[in-house]
Image (cartoon, rainbow, N blue to C red; front, side):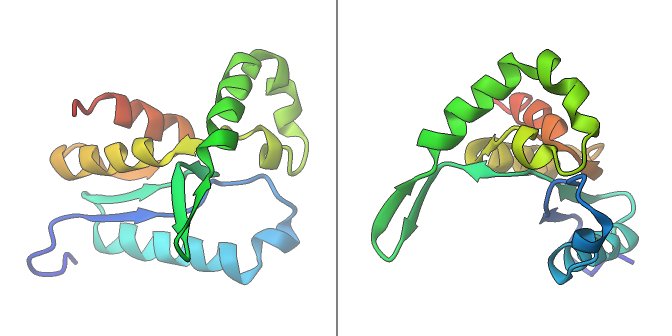
Length: 139
């Protein structure tokens, strides 16, 4: 059931971390998954759930700039460069807390733009799919 006048709904959620079950059942993750289910049930052919991990960029808090990109961008490059070496570790519980690559706020925004402009763009999108969707948008 699409809400009248709202053809698409885009939810920025959270990466599907391989955490122990008791943590996944916490209010934070349970709430995120309930919101995702609601969006996808109400917008089955147009709802979009973006699941980034750590989002980096410049952030302002109380007038101060926090340059999260100074951590996120190099970390993303290192994790991408060592992906083949770290892939076997991904089966370890909670390993993706460290190994899931950060995503730039620009890539999340561009993926959302792609979702708005592309009728075939719907469903759940992982970190890698967010980056692919962002690359398709020319600014």
